[in-house]
Image (tube, rainbow, N blue to C red):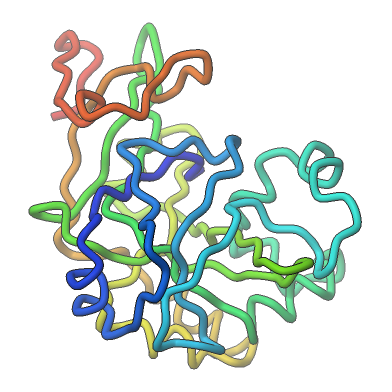
Length: 239
């Protein structure tokens, strides 16, 4: 599950230099915590236009969907994330398979949050690279009337993420900026499956427990203090 992300880099030049792209809009979407169910705007880089940052709504829908809100309501969290093991099956939607193979994207983030089920409560963990370095979450996008919608791909958790996300044991597919072209070039089912079979995340990911407001939609969690470490009881914490 990855319904919660962080993107706090506001420096356009740094974003451009990190991903070797152009960024042509004025206001950079930035947030300490974005709940996916808020249908927020995220920055993406697409395989069709790999040299420019674009904007998309984080909640995918079939191309040119007539009623986005109704579709999102019906599909729940599956519009935010897409399991890699749900692809390329008889039940998989044709438009989704097409998008995964030919309309991939990277959602630009500086971190994401995952829940850990403790003895008495769910504890959110912030996952991030040193100095909040930027990276991408692999996903795919579709075209709507005048804008794009996107979803993040998830896969089986590695050892670190399985310890944290100990119920679902899933993780988003994280991509270092320099590796974007490799993932964008996975154009067949075989290539895609082979790449993910050997995937084990990024090698410099850090983690710390943060305030439970991240998991409470009724709380205002898009605040700087949400990044602060919260120390739980010995029975609850992992590290």
